Image (tube, rainbow, N blue to C red; front, side, top):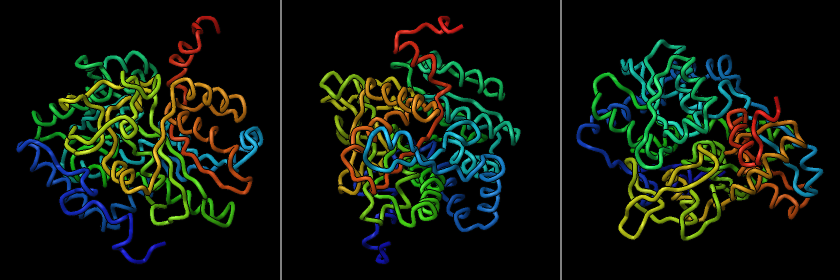
Length: 410
């Protein structure tokens, strides 16, 4: 690992919350005191052994960490190239990586005396994780979710309600993750005294992108240890799906200074990266702008108006990306590609058939890229993808896309 901090990829953001030209803190005057309070609380927590002891205990005994690093033997044999490992974060309590970060934020909220937690969610996994931790600590939970996503992620909506959360369907825009985040920010401005906004991805105003990354980096830290034990060396390639990008940043961050490790983020290509913007590939088809408190790559028109993206995956259906990913893209440390809905669905089915694992549609995008490149790589090439979510939430969406009616299986 690089010893010279000035040559490290792990030193950002700067004091203004910037990763190069990306990131920052673009918020109203009403929110600025809360943002500064949160930053101060997190700076204290980072060096507080009791904070990390509580996190470690909950990660182990509540979440179930460390999650396994699994050799996908049949998939490796089928593809005939690189040796494929899956980081099994879908085995976490609540079924995804989201709870890694939610625990940290809600412990901070409790330290700050906040009794009301709000969150945005797309696929529902962040909403479920937030509702779960709020139930554990006896906090009021309000989850904003696009009306379109409420329909296509019905199992997670019911889970959140069982856990005591209030679900607020958002009907503005196309009723997806972007619109849910807009309404959550409006709520926060209105209820500044008692409310904590638990953001689910590495986006938003500083310090959220770095804070969420730090909590999610448990993924990559575990992979380093597990791969050294399994193979005696680091992986050659890391692959993860990207909406806002928290699962990917969590996997990538502990490896950024290992320049021999290839890093690939996979965006949602929807119906194809085209002029109609029927995709959510911000880095492939977007350009820099400001949204939700930070500067990053966005899908936007010539006038800077944010466009409505499209993806079969509710968790990747976001017209932007975390600012650290935008920076890694521009400096060339990570490569970003796109996968279409059709390719993701094929990978979903292949994973079910060969490995007995039903993946969420989000990591199915990453798996689809694995299926593209693994056959081209030598057999001693070690490839790790993040299986960041389980697929029970997506079975209705997949059945519809494949032309089945759920009643046919009764």
